[in-house]
Image (cartoon, rainbow, N blue to C red):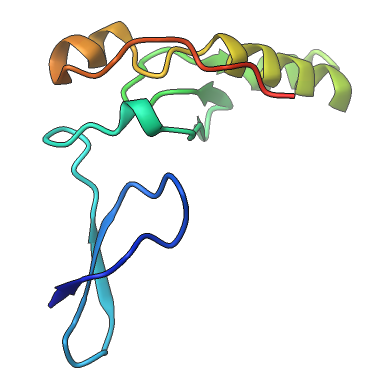
Length: 108
């Protein structure tokens, strides 16, 4: 195997290609090599919670807003507001892995 370049800016996997060209494998080492400072990811759980950190234990409950009748513009405002205030690394993540805990810049 040999290492291969990132597919896109912010990719977190370290990718390796088999020498015979038969495929590739990627490793995400979020604990041993934290990438919090360059993270631009969010996740949505099956319960409707919006998380702005891989290690977050609390998220924004989008399902409740949807069930309360929020329209698309209101949902977008909720997500943008949360994303703009989201710490790049939660305090817990920062303590555990030495990651920087700071706020993301506001998106437009």
